[in-house]
Amino acid sequence: MVSVHEALETILDHAQPLGHETVGLTQARGRILATDILADADLPGMPRSSVDGYAVIAGDDAADFDGLSGAVVRELSKRRGVVVTNEVGMGIVPANELARQFRDVLGFVNTRFAEGAERAVLMVAGRAVELAPI
Image: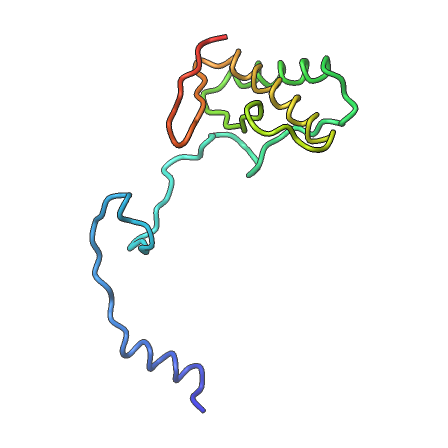
């Protein structure tokens, strides 16, 4: 039996570097990068978690959501950035009550975000549809 060290040495003795080429983004699928890609700046440039969010108790009423979403919109208006959220109003009506409540609350919060945004865009089949100001 060949030891791990001997096997690795054999592989490295026979391995040859691959060449590299520049291709467009649409031709890059399935390829391996020749070098690492590093961001030149943090985005956003502030402390953050990988997933930001707000926890809300299911029994909260609409007034609480209005206050919370208003506070979020005011905070976001101080910064430059993009808010990405699911569109929830044009799909199938959820089968259970909790999912319907979530759809209703998220729809309300999305409306508040759109009201406070410079620009609101709905992505449909990969195309941006500019939404008229509210």
